[in-house]
Length: 371
Length: 49
Image (cartoon, rainbow over all chains, first blue to last red; front, side):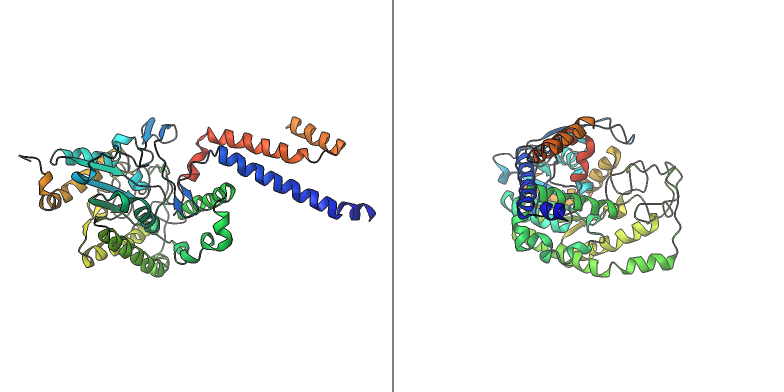
């Protein structure tokens, strides 16, 4: 008893508290000097990865290149440096999540890079940057727009939206979320807290089944879901769809208010209807993560894509319907939504075909003679 | 692992508890350096936002 009382003495408790505090402070200082977690978010702010060169040796996904080179320019985007005469360029920025960033494709093979080369054959002084960021939804795009793109003021922003907005109940009350509370305003300046926050966000991506994966359609197996079960799950999206619609409308309005022309792209997926010509897999029944299957995931994504189409019509914004135009073949995807090199090239050619006329009529001063 | 056990038995034996956070911090630094050189970074790239 005396021993316990001695252990619990104020002096000892103070000593333990001091040791804990010292450890946390030392860790915080260390992380400020060297933080190996290459996160692009700090609290609710986007930290663009400026002037980075990253070689990825890929030995786990045979559908991708063995060596992948990713670089970012002084803006923190993928693509050529910002020219001094940007206002005289046909400037385009692509915004979206992982299906825009194309993290595991080399710089020259992302659909943004292929699109730029394609447009250069018909237009002069094209400047195109890829501002896609893995995991970002329309919530993140709004912050990217407000904090970076309004100042940059490209002529056009292509928004590829949908995949990271699916089932985002955390965005419903985002304004009241932990990172906006007074205590969290202090916490979000801490490196330790940001590691925790980003780990939490990465886990959410894993739970929703939107992370990069190597999906071998020949081996992955099937999952049967009854129509009733699917309808019940789809009905849960009504509230999230309403919020997605509100965010997308605000994004379009603020893009236009900044003097930038938005163009919307729907999110394609390989799964849904039919048979994969590469593996013979039934794209309806293919088993996906988070207890889903091909048909359910496709129908879910279509709910969000339909909102994108409707908002495009309502706001007189051009919509390129990649979800309809992209062929359903695993030649073009290495999982349900992420593009292979061939997929990125196909996306670029669909976009180029669809916006060429639009660009010719709205930006005729950039049209190359004879094209 | 044995080294860590020895260190903590040294601390306990000599009652030099103030050394514990120094060792914990060094351990965490080591783990961070290992993580920094591996593909374990990717979980922090795909952060839903």
